[in-house]
Image (tube, rainbow, N blue to C red):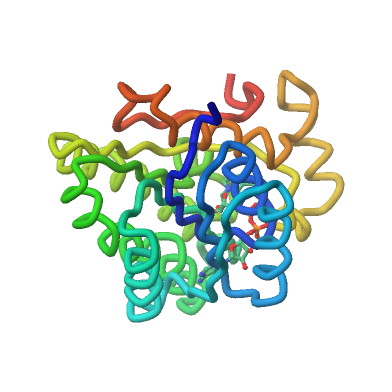
Amino acid sequence: MPRLQNKVSIITGAAQGIGLATALKFAQEGAIVIVCDVQQAAIDEAVKQCQALGAQALGYVMDVTQRAAVDAVVGKVKEQFGRIDVLVNNAGITQDARLVKMTLEQFDRVIDVNLRGVFHCSQAVADTMVAQGKGVILNASSVVGIYGNFGQTNYAATKFGLIGFTKTWSRELGPKGVRVNAVAPGFIETPMLATVPENVLADMRAHVPLKRLGQPGEIANVYAFLASDEASYINGAVIEVSGGLTI
Ligand code: NAD
């Protein structure tokens, strides 16, 4: 049987990159996929691709920074399916600058999407998961959230912060049957890396023992495992998926 059969799964930032790969993987594994993002056309395309894999899929424009929008989507999903099994807090952005150059707008925007957005979505589903006595919340941290990175004061703070969320919620929600884990990808080939100069990408490849960047599907596989009952004793963990970048 597929590992995520009929699991109602909300995935944020699911219109492209790692989020899209995760939506497709969940679709292959039998999940009911709720594609949430801010890009309407790409949402529609992602939903079509999930349906083409035989999955039930719905799409919503949902900006994770807007609490009312998050509550509205969570309410609709509950109304339609009666439960929420998995939340993948994947939506995230970068607005890089060195400490001395970073504007308050850059700082606030990244905190708003990457940290506050995850708080909104998790708080919105937590009561339902607790009432079910079962659920999974997965957070998109990063190797930058373990080791820091040049030019990423705001982003690093959020990705460290997500590890704090993960460990705190695993303590708070674990006793209620809800598992909370984080994935810390290394450098993955998605549109997020589009602004990174080729010489920097070449340097990244050279530093990874596997001598290549990761593919979105290689992160999606880990989310699918963590969302499944095969990971039933994994809680409060931060799984690094970086090809050994930090060895
Ligand atoms: P991406 O930029 O390709 O995709 C991010 C998606 O999030 C986009 O579809 C975008 O529209 C959506 N999004 C942005 N703001 C949003 C908002 N306010 N509300 C809802 N959706 C919003 O990024 P990616 O590379 O696929 O990264 C996905 C996640 O993985 C991010 O949290 C990122 O920080 C993390 N991550 C990525 C890498 C990497 O190398 N690509 C490494 C480590 C961690």
